[in-house]
Image 1 (cartoon, rainbow, N blue to C red):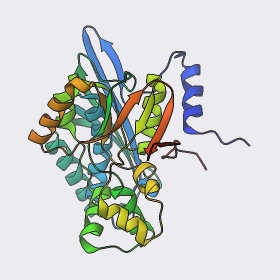
Image 2: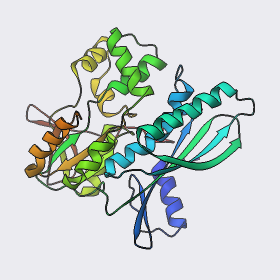
Image 3: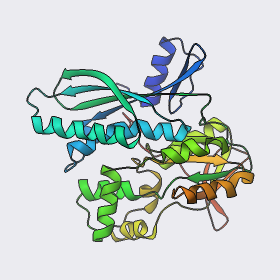
Length: 317
């Protein structure tokens, strides 16, 4: 039996539903009269998305954060949410209280009104979140042009390191371990930065499936070549990788779970974007540039190595 990957499954559904020109995007957009609506749906599954020692409160918050991160990449302010819950029959009141606190934390943090939802019984905890907003436009995954610069909204490699610490019991320097685990349990999407600077972006995309996946998707949709000449990480991530004989590129480019976003911008807006990032205390990093061609390449000492899409894909072996 052939195992279908996520993209093939989506294509089958879209074809059957009559969406022949479907192009993958971070959010869905539709019109209600003159109002352009934006919606994002994401699912948090206990057995695959909730690492050991993660509190139920943090899990509930993160289920909403997954949607917020996509809104941040599109430069859109989220407004309302609906939550559907699948809960085991014998779930405790304590876990329900923790879950409700997590939803409240996220809704307060990003000023979202949770309208309601649905509750069902099942074998494990599954949280399905839908977030809604309105907009006049979004920044799409396509749109990068030759000569643009490529940015990310934060250093990469911490969450992949954090997962290795939690799941594989890897050791590290105490302050690094705390920072890495926090990046997994309590990610912080850069919503305000995305909303306030979207007019300066030529393309953007959420990076939670892995930086290599994001860069390849954006380059492919933009029909351009992305050259990465500055790896967006910190010395302590490289030291962690070296101490455990891990290829640092696996942590930085292929780990996933970073709720940051990648964006491209014209050179003329570079100084303004950096100024705005400084004012909002958003740690953006310039990582490369866009040129003619196709694919994504790492540039090192005038040599170019293909950066393959090795990020997270559901159903892939």
